[in-house]
Amino acid sequence: MKCRRCKEPAVVALPSHNSGFCGDCFFMYFSRQVDKAIRSHELFSREEPVLVAISGGKDSLALLLELHSQDYQVTGLFVDLGIPDSSDLARAKVEAFCAAHGLDLQVVETAAHGLAIPVVKKAVRRPICAVCGKVKRYYFNKVAMDQNFAALATGHTLDDEAGRLLANTLRWDGPYLSDQGPRLEAENGFARKVKPLFRLTEFETAVYCFLKGIDYHMSGCPYAQGASFPVLKEAMADLEEKRPGQMLSFYLSFLEKGKPAFTAMEKEQGADLAPCVECGYPTSAGTCGVCRIKAQVADAGGI
Amino acid sequence: MIHVTLEAQAEQIELENVKSVVALLNKLKRKPARCLVIREQEGGDQLLTPDAQLRYGDRIRIRDVSSRG
Image (cartoon, rainbow over all chains, first blue to last red):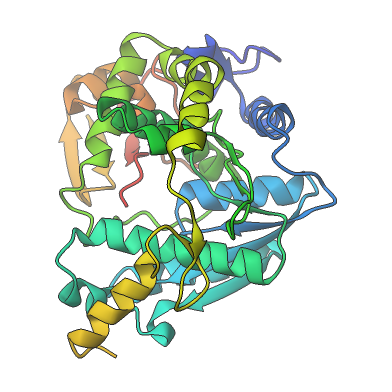
């Protein structure tokens, strides 16, 4: 296979674009997809400070490096969840990566707030992945708001977004469908949330990391076994293999034709948000989810 | 014969009569867009596309790309 642009030998095949690229041309393709994502949905400008949530995995590290290379004002945020044999390994990768590339990094340790995930896991009866996600999002938003970042960027890829869209659609979940997209406006105490990698697949971020020599955290979370979301992501990947381009088409068509209806419906029927009585975080339930988790941990003797 | 390392499983296997990347992926029941196929070589490892031919004695690493939580 030859590179579509320069005719040198290709190192990556992209059936969804009916293309193959050499390393240099792949970087050009990758940068253009990120640029197109940012411009088409006005995610942020080069004058705005952007907080990038990083896990240590390939997607978020690729995002941080690519935005930095495109001269955006980025700061990485790693939330250390205190998960044994996982959080410390991921954190070491993140710290080494940011030091090597001269990138600003902030770290929040949930254990310092009484929310180390092993402690939380013992105290709550709900699936730990949902609780862990809530805790992470809480601190991502809190840092973005407290430090006046213009936007909070995450490394969600097309696989994530299309898989999530499939999950939301299977449940016809109006509130989630109204919120899904590459840009969620800042409102009611929430920072603007953006997903600059929504046009790129996990495969493409993996290729990017390989070609850039990024040493990312590959091990899965020891608590994530049995989570249902990867099943739907795999289902989308199967569909994409049989019909290349379907995943992007599904997602973009939803943004154009489906989302506006759900957004309008949610404006009329959605729950009103107010600051949490404990911490001020926006919630529809008086006390926010994280403060309720803290109370459960305290009841279990964890704090 | 080629030597294959499955990174996710930290497992090493040896395969005979596998002459292309697409044949290797079929044998391993993996999809081209769900893993990187990496040839180990002096001067820097190389990514391989599905149509690439494999050589006797190749050392290949399979890196799954799916995020795992």
